Length: 539
Image (cartoon, rainbow, N blue to C red; front, side):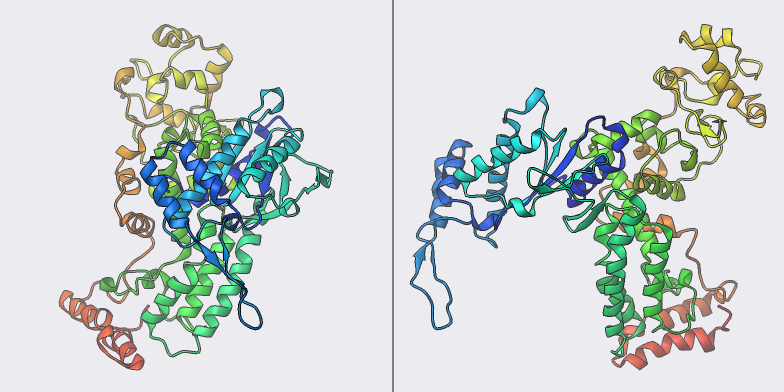
């Protein structure tokens, strides 16, 4: 679905749990499970729904034709049963089936939204295919939701499997169940293990996958594969199965290192690594194997999360991070700040901390008096925490250069009040001005105060890095990975300073034409010859 991704649903649940301190009520997350969801929808209900939703007569007749005279039989031990007419079930595999089922789930959502919820409290619904999640403000909404769904089931045939429904309490809870639905501390949602503990969440999701992938790679080691073949296997069998969790989860450095170590060990058949990984990650033309490391890939996913957030910052999927980011100026402003994520005045979730850390690896904060912000600045601290005053920010007091007078000195309290006409308290004035280091203030002696109407843009899309990261080019991920690797990947030391002719011939022979040989041993020979004989082994 356009502008949607499965990770949106996962992140919404995790954001509610990670920022539970922002929620005042004893809220619940109810995960619904339906019996054979696609197979139980009544055909007559489907046809009536299409008509009530305003689909044209031609379209409704076309759908009825697709489902007319459908029949089936049951395979028995000896032969089959007599054929019987099918009156329920949406046919899986048909291109139009997902859209028809989405119409049914939309009607379910409408029934819940129109239900008589107590005290005017709204039920928030998150849906993806047959997975439905309800965000409830208190326990009183649980029986109301169940009754509405059961009434809908009688009409549609989409029956609730109450034994497989699960609850997570956003706050702490000692009650084992509510209305027959168990309260869980840990459950699986859309393939992701959901738990409140952010540190153990990554381990529970990735450790089983790492062990499974290790066994799979060990099986591939029994085959006589070339270096390029093993690189391809690391992408197809290793990385491809691990990317799903990285889209919506925080990965600590140990998990990333373990994954990279597993992949590099497979590349060298669990033997000595003859070439540094920073060389192997390079392109074929530069003497590498175009190896894809998981650490860089994880950082790329976090940048992509920023891109999706900037496209729709106020959507339901981003409502919680948008509220959190607004407490220090918003995501757009934060991306330009010279921040230290450990000193930000807001407690961020581990996932969002990693998002900002990934951005800081590719966006270089070179000092400029014209873009040296007061807020979220690692150098301007109060009680070891970065500053942010919302009413100063709202009145466009953003830069240190705005706090300097014509003589190059920091403004006095009276000068600030007369210049900006903002009701600043003496306490806030003292906090901000005293937090500016004297060395920083000296750098602004000969800097003119900027015009408030000509302040620099805080749209990250306009930055040089943003033009690469936030474009919609089909090869955007490759360009983002290049930004992360430009300070890491380098040529082999034996290539540096050599004659250009020898380099060009050697690289072309040893690195780019290994695929022209049929046998694996012969394909590996040119690269080994280039590394060990033509060039000195000083890698």
